[in-house]
Length: 195
Image 1 (cartoon, one colour):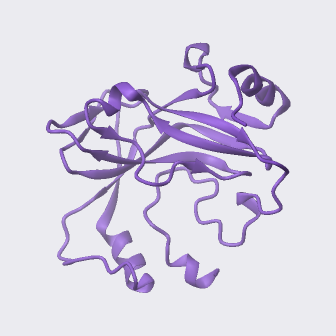
Image 2 (cartoon, rainbow, N blue to C red):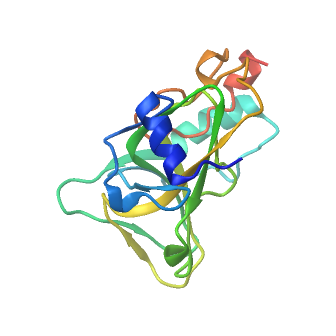
């Protein structure tokens, strides 16, 4: 069952959900909390690699690390996402959730209407999560989109599990993105080491 705004505020008071920094009261909807954009991105650089072989995790890891570069905006700078381009970003807020909750990331309808996708497939936030949420940005529109740090870019909602999980994200062996402080490129190679 999804938590209402009242339930979210109760869970925050109880320490079952934490935001740092805490969003303003205007960010609270009827069952979600708007999150804002940080100024840190991961983008694909132009490389001489003809393709990424998704079945070869060993080569995929090395290539994906080489293919992406970190970009941090300063001051009033904006990040321009051109049509057909993909980039990783992250929430300004660090989010922590209890072992009996799951979170869901959604884009804002007003931004989707100009072609901005904020996640491709990864919209669930595992029970026991602690860290910044990564955005998988894609511009499906026809014009470049200027993204500014602090922009209300998406919303997080929460749902109760039928019981507390025995496998919270932070306790999993090989939790690849736990407590991430920047958007990280694919760490699929770690799945070979930690099946």
